[in-house]
Image (cartoon, rainbow, N blue to C red):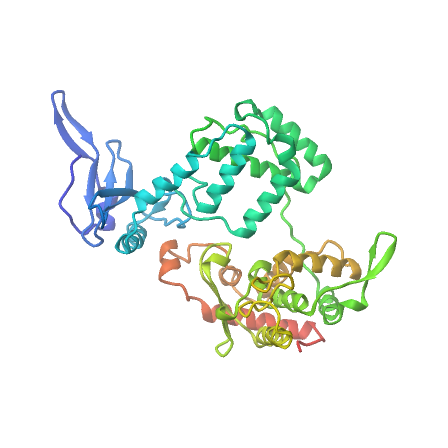
Amino acid sequence: MPKRSETTLTAAFCRSAKPGISMTASGPQFVRAAYPDHDVRGLELRVSAAGEKTWSFRYRDKVTAKQSRVTIGVYDPTVDAPADEPSETRRLTLQGARVAARLLRARVDAGGDPAAERRDARERVKAQPIKTVGDLATAYFLACETGTHRSGRRRKKTESTLTGERWLWRKYLENRISAQDLETVTRGNVRNQMRTICGIAPSQADKCRALLSQFFNFAVDEERLTSNPVARVARMTEDKARTRTLSGDELKVIWTALQNPSRLRIAKGDREEPVLISRAVCLAIELCLVTLQRRAEVAGMKRSELDLKNKTWIIPEDRTKGRAEHLVPLSDRAVALIKAALKLHDDRKKGSDEAVFPSPRSKDLPIGAGALSHAMADLTAALEIPDATLHDLRRTGATGIAALGVPPFVVSKVLAHKDSGGGAAVTARHYNLYAYADEKRDALERWSQRLDQLLTVRSQ
C-alpha cells in the first residue's frame, strides 16, 4: 500500500485525497493509500481503492515495540460524531480526528495498548459459551460491564441502566425463553412472547422487545448468529412522546405539599395511609424543579461537584446521560435547597460524607433515583393531580424558560441535551466545555424568578 511522506494534512487535501496507483501487468490499478499527518504523530487518512476514506492511528507499543493500528472513524468534511459511536462508522472531520488521535496518543504514552485492549475485551466475551438465550444474556451483560457490547464502542453502560435491563430480563423474559437454543428463536416466537407480556404489562412489552433486540444484535456482532430475529417484529404499543406540563397552580400545590407531605393521605387497598416522604427526598424533588436536571443526577449529587461560593454544580461525565461533563449554574433558590440538604445530613450524621442525599439503607451510597419518582407518584396521587411524573417537572421548566424568551439552543444547553455546539461536536466537547455558562445562568435565574412569582412557600 503506498504511503506518502508525512505532511500536515489540510481540510482541502483531505477532501481531494485519492487512492494510490499501482502498475500491474494488466495496467495501472487503484490501491489503498495512507496519508500520515505531521501535526499529530500516528494519525493517518487512509483512502481505499474504491475511494472510501477512513481515519486510523498507528503507534508502537512501549513494551514490545510492536507497531499496531486502530481505526478511529470515517472521514467526513462537515460532521464530528460523538465519541461513543462505533469507530467503524463514527464520522470525523480532520479536526475531530486529531482530537481523537491525541487522546489515543495519551493512552499509549501512559503505557496503554488500544488495539490489544479491544482484542482482549472481545476475546473475553467470545470465550463465553453462547448456546441458549440465557447464555446470550449472560455474555451480553458481561460485555455491557466492559464496554464491548457494541462493535467498536469502548464505553460501559451505567449501573442504573444495567440494573433496569437485568430487572426486565428476570421479571419478564428469563423464565420464558432462557432455555431456548439461539438457532430456534424466530420472529414468530418473539412476537408471541411480546404479545403475552403486553397482556400482562403493556408498558413493559416494548422495553422487553428492545432489550431482546440488543441481545441478538450482540450475537450478530459476535458472529454467533447471522441475523437478528427481533429486527422485524413490530412494536406492541403506540409510541407517544409525553407532552405533559404542569400549570402554575399545580406547581404551587405540589411545592406546598412538599413542605409537609405527611398531612396528605393516599389510598392503600381498603384503607388510607399518610404519604411518607423523607425531607431529603422532598428537597431533591424541589431541586429537580429548580435546576431542571435529571432525577438521577440530582439524587446522586456529591459535595465534590459543588462550588456554592461561585454557585456552580459540575456533573461529571460518568453521571450524565450524554456522557459529557455538564456545568449547572445555581440560582439562590437552588443554593438554599442544597444547603438545607447538607444541614439535614450533617445534623443526623448518617450516610456517606460525599453524598448530598445519602441513602438511608447504605452509608456509602446516595438515594436511588427511583425513590424520587415513587415519592412524586404518591404525592400527585394524594393531591389528585392526574398524569404527572417527576420528569414532567423538567419539561415544565424547559417550556417555562422558553416562554420567558430563552433561545431554544440555550434551553438545550441547560437540559444537557446532545448537540453539535454550533460547530464540530468534538470541539464543543473538548474545547468549549464551559461555553454558554452565562447564558445558562441567565436562563435558570429567569426560571427561579418565575418560580418566586408562582410559589408562595419559599425554601427554608
